[in-house]
Amino acid sequence: MPIPILMPALSPTMEEGTLAKWLVKEGDAVASGDVIAEIETDKATMEVEAVDEGTVGRILVDAGTEGVAVNKPILMLLEDGESADALDVSSAAAALSQASAVETSGVPSPSGDAEKKGSEGPSSANGSASPVANGSRIFATPLARRLAHDAGIDLSTIAGSGPKGRIVKTDVEAVQDGARGAAAASTQVATAPIAPAAAAMPRAMADDKIMALYEEGTFEVVPHDNMRKTIASRLVEAKTTIPHFYLSIECRLDELLSARKRMNDGADGRFKLSVNDFIIKALALALQDAPAANATWTEQGMLRHTRSDIGVAVAVDGGLFTPVIRHADLKTLSEISNQMKDLARRARDRKLKPHEYQGGTTAISNLGMMGIKRFDAVINPPHATILAVGAGEQRMIVEDGAPIVANMMSCSLSCDHRVVDGALGAEMLAAFKAYIEDPVRMLV
Image (tube, rainbow, N blue to C red; front, side, top):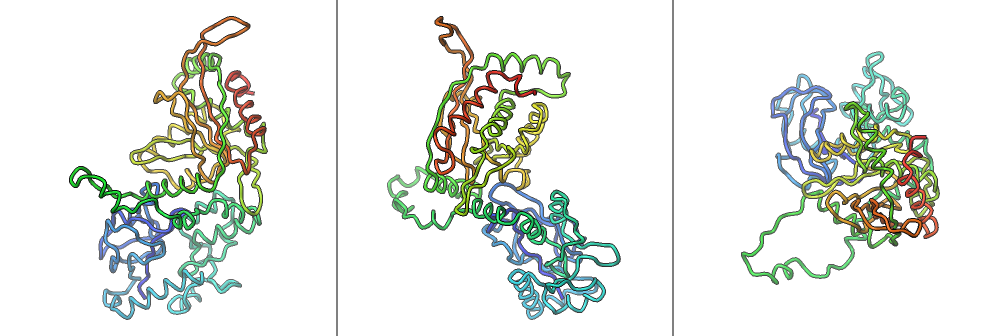
C-alpha cells in the first residue's frame, strides 16, 4: 500500500508551515535519509528527510503552498514492487486514513504493516512494532536518532509508534518526559504559546478600516511571513501576560577593554573576543551567583534552572533569532566567541536548527553597536529576564571626588515580577556589574 509522507512538526510549537521547495519529482527513487523537501517554519527554512524508502508516486502539495498543517499528507510513496496503479482513489484514500490513524493513536494500522511484523520483529507491550528488525538494525528517523544520541538514550529500549514500528521524535521525547517527570510537564506548560488568548483579544480596528485611512495607491500590502507572525504573537503574549519591571545600571568598561585587547593580541588568530562575549559570560556567571533569578514561571510551580543557557538576539532580514549559548557559565570566553560567531552566521542564513534557538534561561539584546545608548527590552517567553545593553562610550564621571573620563555602558534588566522581585533583580545586576568591571574574575 502507498505510504503517506506527512507534513512534519519541525519544532514543538509548529502548527503549520510553508512547503517551500520539492527536491524530488514523481517517479524518483528515494532512500531513508534522503532530503526530499524544504519547509519554511516560523524561524527558518529546514530540510526534510525521507523516513521510508520507495518511489515518489504522487506529490499532494505543490511547492510554495503556505499554511500546510502539521500531519497533513504531502506526498505518496510507492513501496518496492508497487506501480502507479496503486494510487487510485480508493487505495490513496485508505493510505490517508492510515496516516490519520497513526497520528491519532500513535500505533500503525493493522493493514499492510501487521502482515510485515513477522519479518520486522516482535510487537511491544503497547502494540507497536519493536524497533529492532533484521537482526540488529533499528528503524528510526534521523531526527529521532539525533535526539536519542543527545539525551544518551539507547534506541533499542524504545518501542516505535511510526509506520512499521519506526522510532519517531515523539517516541524519544516520551522517554525523556518519563525521566524528567513533573518538571518536564511544567516546562511544556511554560513553553507552549498562548496564541488562543492573544487571538481572543478584540482588535482595535479592522484592517479594512485602517487601509481606508490612507489614499489608495500610496501603500502596498506586504503579507506577513511566518517569522513576523510568530514575533507578533509572542510579543503580544509577553506584554499582556508578563508583569514587566525594569532595573538599570551603569558599568565601567576600562578594565574589560584593556583585558580584551591583551587577550586578542595574544590569540594568534585563534579567536577574536568582542565586548558582547564578555557580556554573555558575565550574565551567565551572575545567574549562578543569584540562582533564584535563574527561573521560569509556570502555573504548576517555579522552574529553578541549574545551568546558565544564554539566548542572544541576532537581527536578520524581517525579524530576529535568539540562538542559545548552552552552559555559558562553564565555557571559556574563546569558546563563547567562536560559538556565537557560528550561530550568528547561520542565523542570518536561516540555517539554525530549532534546538539551537529554543529554550534558554535568559537573553541578551545588544544594540550598542548601532549607537543606542539605553533601552528596555521585552521579555522573551518563557524567560523571566532579558538584559538590554547600550553602547559603550566615554563619559565624565566622578572618582574620589575628582572628575575623570571613563568608558561607560548602560544596561537595563527587564524582569518578570512573578519570578524576580526588585531586590533579586538588583542582586543579579550587581553580580553582572562586578564581573564586567573586574573581568579577571571570569577567568577563575
